[in-house]
Length: 224
Image (cartoon, rainbow, N blue to C red):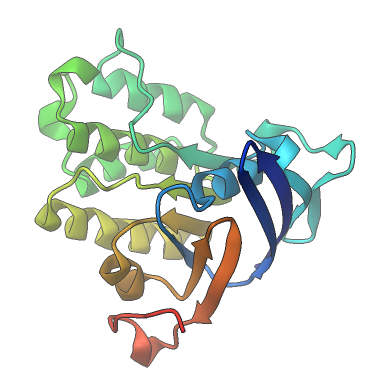
């Protein structure tokens, strides 16, 4: 699989200029706050089209000049740091809504079990912790079977034990469903443990792009 992306975007004193070709299944995106990580993910999702000069995925043109492929046909899901949930719907209703959009609604029961959501199903977002909200949003995304999953610190509110369990399940679903994953995190140790490639941004520029061979995964990666 391949994601090709060219970004050229400026706002006040910040400029983001990137030309990337990503071919692995699980890509980490690292950098300090304000380095352009969120803009990168939103541009790929089509949520910030003014930032992208070109975007293509698996040979499909998503954006070029004035052309922009519809968001629904991309099946690229962006998960923000704070889960975007509907306050008037329970956790179960969120999952049922995702199931109604999915071609594989039978996945729902298995995802509820794998992510240990049974105790949360009758609760509303306001009754959930921020970590539980993130877990619900991720489960909801997986039910829809995305082609590209864009995680913007989307497991940052989970404690270490819960995060490890969620990431283990996420890796299994990635292998089963075959989607590509771009994961923004400030935790380099996590990225090195799970990612096959890491993109390091600094002040809107590519600081370093590093492929991790299987024997390197779990080792801390530092920019040169």
